Image (cartoon, rainbow, N blue to C red; front, side, top):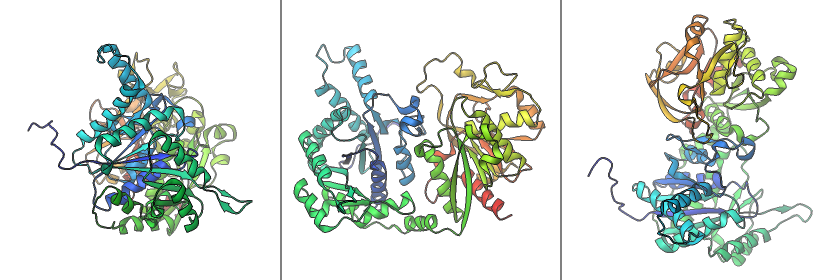
Length: 548
């Protein structure tokens, strides 16, 4: 067998499809990720993926206001933020195969039609589009022979026009592989009508009825609720939705952290129900490590306030992985991280001291464009001059470099050519390979690449004195090599460079408690009980700053 040959499967793949009804934003992604956690703790090898019904090829060109953060995988795929939940909650190593949109499906179908692959046939939704979706599932199955269970979340809400073709494909797929290998989980909302003092099951009943019209009968119904699900309503849902009462599961609001979700779903034995539906015999999950992590998040000894300075700050999901990485690093340091969201445009109007105030750390995350950039520069200056721990990510690293060039190197007019094309000192410039590129989608420096750390730096120590690291990127602009010597002579240490091309990857200020900025996105590699070393060091420095 050659190195590239994939070994045959030893046993059939089991498939779980998670659909949603009534309203969006129920937390299907968290439910799918939490189920993955529980099944892994039962000893199963699990893989997750997301089907999104929008016509964009991927979310890479979508505004955070539309879609939250873009989560980048090792292979450079720009994906939905739910894939971040999948990777944080499980041991999955996801790729572009694990993210599929309607845009990708139609793009492939039209390409095949143009090539003549359909041999002159009329190209139709059924069978050609549905076959493309089924082929994708089969490809994931073929490429992952070691995986026991594939969990697929279907974006959107049952009844939406754009999602219907995915559901039809899943109906067909269940017939193809045999019902004994498929489990359908439908997630709905159980609203509490306060005036009546009652939980209403009718939306769930009608949502399931809509799903059954398509030809899919759910095996398990997960009810999103603010309250416990009493037995009377459980049996009512079971009767009208044609499932066993034990297969009606409550997914309650969690008090302290989203990482409590697997423990909540375990209360109604969701993982056991799935294994019974799929005829799998597995041991009960050992969740002590997960419970220990949740306890660290819920009941820490210390507390810090960290300002996150951005321009999409009012939207919770715009910096989702950053917030989760701070929470994870906080647990590692026995610390509750209170995030103070600061709109960078407010800093431009009122100044950094008045807007940010007394915090124990300042973080500038990634982003694009000129809006709010000057406020971020003021925030970086405020952190540097007041010895407040500072962490810059992607654009945050470029902002730190611009601020240092202006105010320490005295390079008046220093800027990025992204914001000011003809600036006096382009200390941040477009990467050479980006010159002449006009398409916006999937054309940046994307995915994992290797960097070389410099011994004697804070970053080198935080990474355990490893010479080489691999991190994920998503950017077009870089530190201009024409200015690196001048920046270093003035005190901005280059702590890491890319293994290929020598691009600046990390900058530091040595005589500062913690002033570290990275061109890559470390937030994409934080996991419960495994905080990213740079986030871990930043939170630790923030705790020390508070107790100094």
